[in-house]
Image (cartoon, rainbow, N blue to C red; front, side):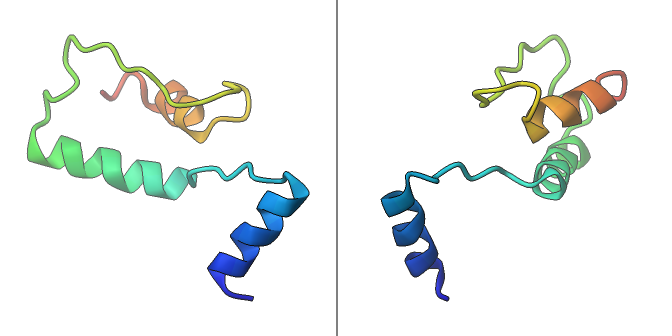
Length: 68
């Protein structure tokens, strides 16, 4: 099934919760850190999530908070 068909079916079923994978978050965050290790120093980070208990963004920052 193509991606478009999957999205169309999810929309019809109202099953449209799609989550960013932890590995994608990790790759993106590491790219920022490699470019500038202090990029997040003294910053407030707003996490794009509806439910922090299920969010891979929340999980990533909770596990790596001391690193960044």
